[in-house]
Length: 100
Length: 271
Image 1 (cartoon, rainbow over the protein chains, first blue to last red):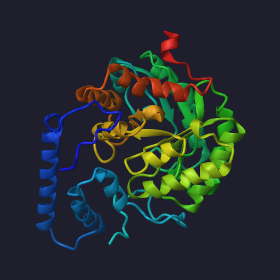
Image 2: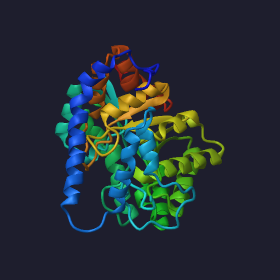
Image 3: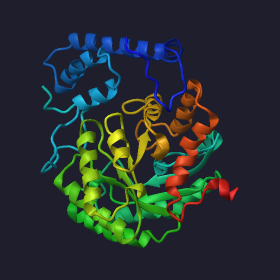
Image 4: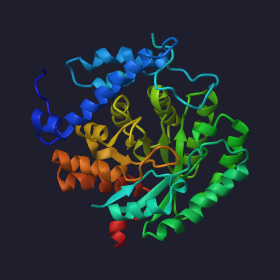
């Protein structure tokens, strides 16, 4: 576990206090994710790019350094820099389709 | 507790929401023009929408004691049609004369297309021509990082726009630092789920110098919560932030940014 590095804008708090506030929330979300992966296993067909992106992000959760959310969002982001000619849809899917 | 809702799409909400917001401590609401969930077919539809934003909605909000302000534009989701965009942009100057209009917004990008970029440049030019502040919509999900960078490049390329008069909204953990580092204001948009939640927003607030950040609900016709800002304030209280720090974030910061328009009146100064 990394050494605590509280942000200057955050009141000092212990890890136990953080767990008291947010553990149950994180617990049910993790169980929801496990249930989602089980549901996928029971379904037919191939895996689409969104689920592929989700699986690719899971190892980032176990990294030791802070900044996991930003790293996951960056992983799922379109890495190109130029505007595209035309869009096929108005909606975004949540994961860049080109992610391998 | 007092707060400003600086980005709420109230035309999509019921009067019950106005009531709930007023009871929760809301002191003023700002409403940027946005996509209606379907593409409007002509500039006439936008004319009516701008009338709604500048004439009808302020009256509806006033029934709950809430000042209502607006921002005008054609939303990037409808910017692919360049002819329609030109017709709508031609309407905007007339409505900028309305006493509750604060600037041009929410402009930006949706899918980061060439046409969206051209219309964004036209909106920025219009804001410069009429000396208006700018409220920026950044794309969602996988398009956000690229779109945010394209938008900031576009704003800087104009050469005249002052970053401190621009708020770049819908920032998340992978964009907030770049936005603030380049001198812009950053808006964190709160959702019940799917994007930044009140809990994640306060994590972000604790990781940056929050002097140029506001929180907003962006409540609209989709799955959203008009009380997201007070819920984020509650999260700050749970974590031990002081009442002064909360007030600075949810009231002081939006008042500071919005007061760059002479039309915005600090509700506390009016009391």
